Length: 272
Image (cartoon, rainbow, N blue to C red; front, side):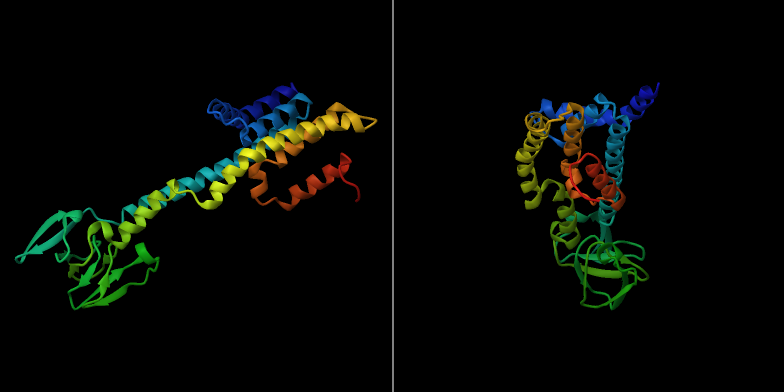
C-alpha cells in the first residue's frame, strides 16, 4: 500500500520527464538531463528508496513551473511592448487631416497627435510645447515636456494638448521598431555561452553516465565488503547531482548540509 502511494505521487511529476526523455531519444539525443533524471529516479524505486525518487522529480517539477511562469511573464511583457506602437496615424495634408497606416507615413509628413494618443513614428516636434509620457521607452513615469524642435520618439504618449510632429524616420527605422525587432528575434539568436554549453553537454552527459557505471563496477574489484545496492545508490546520487540543471542553480544551504551528511553516512568522505 505504501508503494502505491509513492507511485501515485511520482506519476504526475515523473511522467512528463520520462516522455521528454523518450522524445529526445527518438530525435537521436540519447544522453540528456531527462535521461539522467529518469535513470536516477527509476533506480531509486528499484532499490526501494521511494521518498528520494519522488523528491527528485518533485523538485525538478517545481523548477519547471517557475521557469514556465517566467516565460509567460516575458511573453506578456513583449505583448505589452507591441501594444505601444499604434497601427494608424493622423497626417495633415493641405490643412486637412487624414488617417493612414503608420507604415505608409513618409519622412517629412506632419502628424497630428491628440491628447491620449501615442506617437507612431520618430519625429521633430513642430508645436511650441507638449508633454509626453515616456514610460513605454524609458520606464520613467514623470511627464517629459518637449519644446519646438525637440526629438520625439514612437511610443510616447501625448498628455494634454494637440501636437504636430514632423516625421524624420521611416516606420521600420524608428527606435521602437528596432527595440521590438531585437526582442522578437532574441529567442532565435543563441548567445556564445549557450552554444558552448550545448556543445559541452554532448560530451559531458555521456561521460557522467559512464562514470556512474564505473562507480558501480570498479568497487566490485577493489572493495572487500562490496554491496551492489549501496554502490548503485551512490551512482544514482551521482547522476542526480551531475545533471546540468543541478550544476547551474544555487543550492539551498539546507540541501547542501543534507547532501554532506549523506556522503558521510555512505562513507564517501571522512570527518565530522
